[in-house]
Image (cartoon, rainbow, N blue to C red):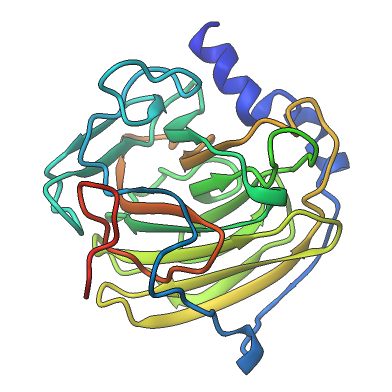
Length: 273
């Protein structure tokens, strides 16, 4: 299968139907005590965990020998001022095939999971942002890969460096008040839930792992479409910048419990504080 076709099968093959498919309910800021995350200290719920100490290469559905994850676009591991360990990933955001990032084919139990990732975004050059005015930092498919179809949930960064939580191609967005600092690490924990009007949540932590914001939004993530059972989870996005720029990521996990902002060792195990 060609790279362009594989990429299209991930998210965009039905993009022309996105307005019809992306039914949504309004976003809201959730600051009640009950909304605070319950963090596991044992990390027993981990499904995937990586600090990107191994190469990323090959196609997402078959990375090949020596590749920890498959990629779309120009992505590499290296010593890029990483948050944990010697290596992290660099993603070239200008890709006119409009797909860039690392992907794991990871079914989510019942279409539900917590996803953590560290992100670092340098200054966004003038004129860089595509139509819509945002970068996509991650896209998660809320499906179990067999019986529960899902429409992707994504985390965005806007020109003012606020973060947004929305459906892929969705117009309803829950945005943080907090603005990400330029070229400094921060951490996102995302809760994705499959359902109609299902609550999606995002917790944000600064470079010292201190909580700085959280938002919630109700979205229709259980949707039948051509690739609703494709369990492809991505650090990266599908909209090319209009000028060259790079973003960076580290310490990625997918879990059945909220593990908070993890630092992950080269063996895929969380490091103690």
